[in-house]
Length: 244
Image 1 (spheres, rainbow, N blue to C red):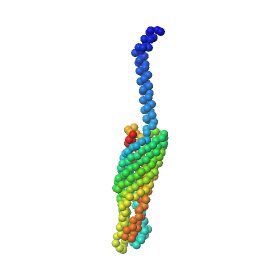
Image 2: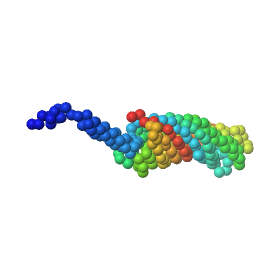
Image 3: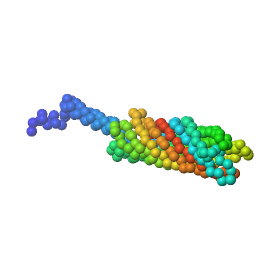
Image 4: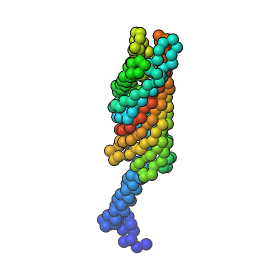
């Protein structure tokens, strides 16, 4: 065997070592580039998260009716209605499951605000309807698709609870004032739609529309039975931080 060939095999030259190093560096750079590309294509909506939200109440409607038992209803139509707008905010948490372009999630939140409806009516009688709401909470499911890798669009459905303090004060033209009051936690359902955007700063921004219909409540006091029924429309902006 040629001694020169054996020497070169056992003791590679500097140029050969440089070529090997360049090949290794190129392979490492390529692998990192592929990994970065995969991260960019799959931003990852899956996993646990927490965050904050700000909600604007487009309308919170109060509808009710009076049924005379032994008293006098507020007016001849025996019904009333009012609407109020407002702001609120709170905290949220949830979990998403992602399978390719399909994402399914569950989210819970609690919101705080001070919404007040006041309605003064006249007719056969005169009086005032007052409704105060200070907090609400919800548990909702979200299901949708990724039209592009960093955008999730979805539908929303779930349950909601809210605290309301409702009062109806009737002042008949003949006789003393009658006050009906009900402080209760209302339950109901929520439906809506929204979109969530993945940012490059490891947080997501969501935009939701929600319609919530709360179950009606009735109260009987001083011979007067009154039904209160609430529903709400709102826009929400959320800021979410992944935990994984």
